[in-house]
Image (cartoon, rainbow, N blue to C red):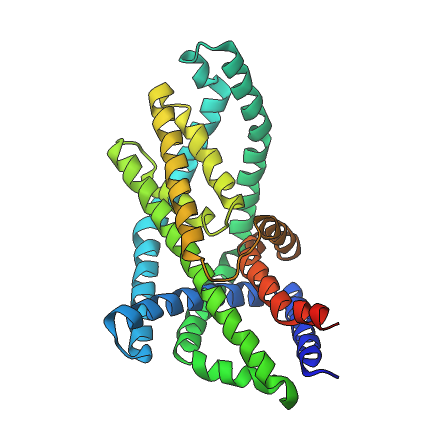
Length: 334
């Protein structure tokens, strides 16, 4: 059999094994996902440091790990606690805005009022269901979250420092005759995955900081909560923007026309900016069709649950590179 076909079949078998283990052991999947994302971010930062500071890759990786964990600890200590303490008040404010139809006090256009009422009536049940679901999930999975965080941190350190050795071991899982093709596949997958996740992470940081600064500048409450929510949801391309915008839009209804105008305008401008930056930064790399990305997010969330939403983008990148390296080559050769 042709070496490329052998490599393709072996890869599909290993993917099937990973999916089965992930479905049986959810903490295994969550740990692998968080570790993988952390390693890709650290590798992207290390490559940036190596390129511009001209230091050895090992030293750059250590510096990148220190930066990553400093940002992680700072977020866990300074941002996350403040965000979580504001959730109850923010949820109460949103429900009050919806019940009192606050926007009717300052909007004179009957058609616009009816449109907003219809939109809010459509969103309201989903907000209540989401809040109840998040509370149940948080209470049930706190021990698991601690375990996942612990092992993902260990995994991020180990894999980042020994990534080169690990990449050398992977081809040994394949027959000798197809190892050259697998090395090529892994190299392209790593380059594209690192770039993709690195750019998405940078966009998430930019949007989170931008909303924090906006809320501080406008002297609005809930800046830590909104910043954290914007950061988290922007790890989910396209779909995450909708998740992000709903609570921000509902909050803006309590600010009057001027406040609502500035919030909406800022949201459009910041997302347009990171959207342009994303496509500029991805020039020369694997292009993932937005439709494929959306379907990938939907499928991974159905298979792996809420955490699977964050697996949609890596899965889509994998599919694109896998198709290019194996399936497309087979179709063209036949």
